[in-house]
Length: 244
Image (tube, rainbow, N blue to C red):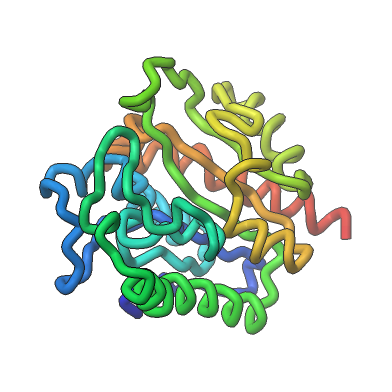
């Protein structure tokens, strides 16, 4: 484990690597975001359910994982290094005054301590294990505070230019009776930084999975959705392998 990530053990021979950018709400002791503690338990700070679902999926599939080790309010691993929202100053109606007060030097230091080591670790792991499929695991809130629209999808499958895995997964989800969004509730063509960098940048197929947070916010939900998703992920891997 590093301050920027947690490794979950698994067998590289499965051909899969799971990545959970927003799996933690940890804020290092020397960082003051200036927000109430309650905010750190909301979707703006962490992808609710992802850490537990990621562990369950890795246990079932036997694959390794890399889970982000700090809150997305500290630095958002799923943003490009030069993105305006990399260190957010506001998120879904919450002001983050500690981030707004950062000097350019403090901002650069935070990126150097967390964002760069995290992505370097993913790069090194991919170079070592040569996975055939990356699993990008996220979760989404049923409704944004700054947008009253309901988000009815149970699962979203996100992708940018490489839709190989998505095109296999979406029919499988449909067959399982899952209400799945095709590049919904938001588009991977707009927000897909980690998979753009490590998936598309290496010509590795990736499955971008978003799970609605109210479905995986307790142990029963984690267990149920692990049972649903594990065979679909395996099916995607096997179908991709058959095409090689």
